[in-house]
Length: 194
Image (cartoon, rainbow, N blue to C red; front, side, top):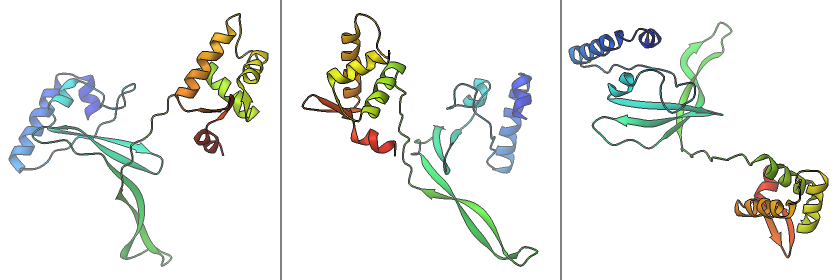
């Protein structure tokens, strides 16, 4: 229905009016379920009227093993903190299938919400430099730089300055450790590859 509303703009107001009438007449909650946009995954597709006329907007985000609910708009109240759920099988009491086995269903059980970590991808040259150091296990700065030049990760006359910038970014992001001039992949980074 909302797809049709998106295509035929003049029907949006009619839907909002019907929604208001049903809500007031039956003292009921009217809920629309809609999908997110192509590019912006934090809002629904379509006209602003859909968002603007809603009293409450809740975004459902899926992740491996579950989903989470996020408060996007609460008209007359404070937004709630994100809530996470994971599926849990349950046996339906008193029901059996044709083979006499208990009938099961799946319910979403609340679990602790843990915000996702945002890992930004490294630029290609920095990622290659880190991969080379992983292969080397440990190296002095000079050995690492020579290897990067030999593999043509770093090219040109200014390879020393480029190496210094790469090394600084990787150290600042705690992706490499330096001990007495010897560089190695940071512990957390090494363990993540196992």
